[in-house]
Image (cartoon, rainbow over the protein chains, first blue to last red):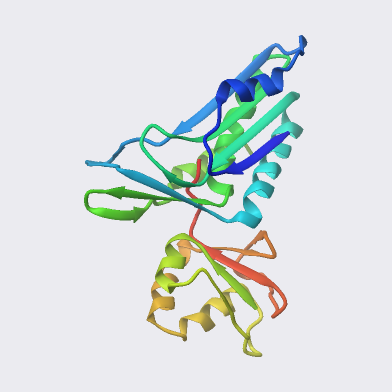
Length: 149
Length: 83
């Protein structure tokens, strides 16, 4: 399991290569990439700042990854989450799961994102022409996490 | 006790961490918050919405009724919005 909390951007193809290496047993690689959108309601977002809790962030991502590995037969797993100042179009988060079959790879990636939304210690602050504001947590995110049981 | 603040709570209080000596009667995270609220309006504003408050003690998430002591490190923050 590769876990990274970093300010630098990540290279999706390079990360896939790290998991695939020269393996020939993998039947499926699923990737999810979260991006900074430029729209929030009516206002254009100019910048997003991601604050994180350094002592907990990697540890919590690893816990989520371990939970996913316990639930599905994964062959490999990468979770990368960025922090700092980001701009529309920038990559925020990357999840890659590999498995012998697609179902485990798809489900585990979705599970990891649903848990990450509520359990990983990151906070988004958006800047629009009206100033800056903290993004509110969505109740829907709790429901999505709970739906996995 | 060392206390860390993050995001909206950090901004309301105006600092990212501080050292506080807990009064005798303080036993839970909720008690700590109640004590902090006596220190000024910035604290009151930070904790005005109890539903939007999360805590960790020594880098583990805990409920607000969790017992704490002066040797613990407490972190207070709003619900997470990463991803």
